[in-house]
Image (cartoon, rainbow, N blue to C red; front, top):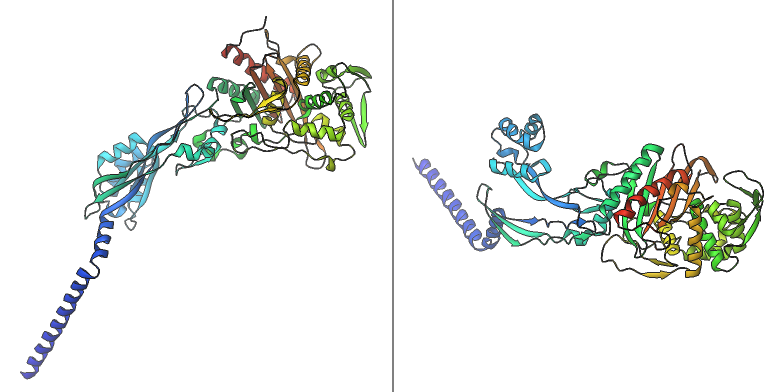
Length: 547
């Protein structure tokens, strides 16, 4: 009996000790840790989330929308809370654009606390799922980038990632202005984790709109013309630039093959490249205009200076011949440029000399960026005279042995077209434009008159002529380097650069076709593309025919 009483006493004492410990713990939690526990409870009941800002529009010069933001939905699940995975999957699948079996497989993983079901659904699908009010299914609505004109100016516009940040092109270059500032939102939840109220503590600030100098109809025409070049000549690629030479505004920047900004990552790397600014290529005969301009500016000759030209000319170990076989001939400087004579151009280059030639090449802006407000611009490759070989002056005056971009070539021809002055090229309205004199008005006028002759009788650009208008321009056909120190006999770059009207330019168009098949000459491949673009743009811009 006494043993039983002793055991009861021990149990009672143990109970008192445990009771005192629990009381002490409660007192400690209620005093020492009260603030921390209350904060922890609030953190479980109040969740702070980011409110994505609506990205600014990108439009053409007339307000045509090229890039907009529309509501999209991200749908997620807490599989642990899904009571009927099969039934829930059947209800959701049509809105998720997925098979019910795929959705059910995700919802059946009850060990998971979170799983994505779909990203960037259209806003209507997200709203439909929200109205179902299915426990364990959540919908987050955020802006999604959409390109209403599909592939139009795709390489120029670039793309936006699923996180809403610009990845390339103008979307990346103008990220800070376009993106705006995200807001903040507090979501109050009940004990089961269901939202009961939403408090917006800081509203999102929408991004600024970006208006371009691009003219959508001219851009569309340029891309259609390049697509036709693609069908007819099956090149690796093609590029067209359309500029207002009076102020440097880019009216079109087209590349073929096209790319859809909404599927940008799935396109080949070559297609994604904006080759109007990023392609380094040897220009060939279109470069001869700068050789002539430098010689005229240095007063080593004038347009009527004549040269007795043999069929070929040798410079060190290099023999230069014409693109078409001929006998000895006497040509003026103007005739040399109109006929695109290789022998004549090298002769003029030798008259100019290597140091003065290099100075004028760089004065035209080759070997450095043009300051165009488009990302990814290459600077070209121009060797200094110290790296010239004995035969360098046998190929550099012809546009071989150096590399340029289409944008650089357009700027060089802008100087000739506009009396020796260039204006900073740009695609964003409101860009600060810098005016720069490259050569004298006298020389610019002389070269421009010679370039009119390229489209005249005996010139190489008959296919570029537009009835009713006087035009100026130059063809180019360049062999591509073969990577072994020589030049390919099967791979070429065909080009044409010109402007209209020749005496009062309103349009400057540069066309570059990379590795055409079949016909290779610039006068037969690129010049017709120039003509088709200009034939549309002149009446579209209400530029009347000349009397």
